Image (cartoon, rainbow, N blue to C red):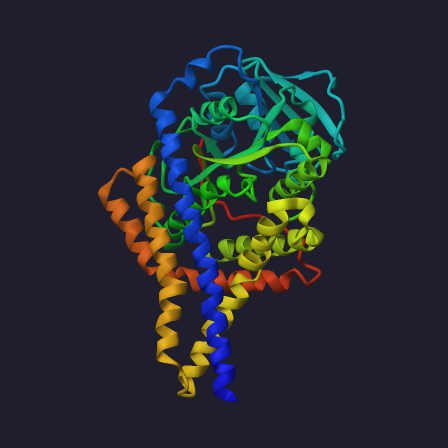
Length: 465
């Protein structure tokens, strides 16, 4: 009887990771034609000529800021320097208590303008609107604190373009990122949302809002996050383009159809406003029975700050995982619901069974193997299959992502840095990965506590002008 129990557990664990990593392998396979197609578009470069004319819609860049004095000027400067003709930059000072607003006022010579913008989405009270004497495309909104999502909603109210892009105040958009997104807008119809790649700015050289030299962060956790982000953004989300669209457009960098966002009520004030918004857009468009596209563009890039300390990273990952469980719970009626097509049968089940419950299964696997070894009943064949399927496949996918990133983007041109990332991909499974599994398990159980909606201030390790 005991042997049957152990055999059942062995088969469950192996089956789970075989299905999950097999799906990740499918995403990698689907990524290749997307990369090849996009690479040909970039080489042809014909669509860029059209962007010089009034054939593409304008776009609003919305930057919410709360106590961001260290990075706000560089972030706004980067946004103002983009290579696109028809855009505006909207900065929302969300009740900052430091000198964020005074820095904006002095640097850009702000002056008050009448409050002529409609309040389509309800937000915390707006105090004043300001324009810049130096940059006519810059609008600054000063409002009472309402949170990041509330600030973006205020920016949507004031925007004049049919599309908007939300980026964080600690992020730096590459000059050609908007061009790359809008080029895609010319080749596809019914764009509802598009996401881009988040790269890690820690360790890089930043001058006047531009990344002049890409370097790996000096810390172990920072470099591990570079490898993790490459795997997450470069192959994972590109493959979703062939499977009904991305299930998540990151709040750190995403382009949205403004009317569609207004129809779903704007961004919700919750832990994962970006994930909630993406799911709501999928849901809304399915209910309207209208064709739509939610895609990911790997070559549109924004550089962002990430936690460099153990405590800061732990807080972030616990919060992220609680938010995944929260969104899955809110939209549980979509799971395996024919009404929502591939979203109900693939997107939400993946978020729940792959992302949400994944760390619980993996953590149980670690404890199970340790207990079996301690009591002398460990099945050696099972152990090596577990290592091969759970860790080996993951290692291969990570290394493949690093190589593909260098082939198509070449952001880290130093051979030493590339070799360092490959080495970190090798050691990830038995160093960094168990940490993230533990943090995500804590985040899962945090969802069931009264602190699940608590949002801690992220530790800042970046300060640029």
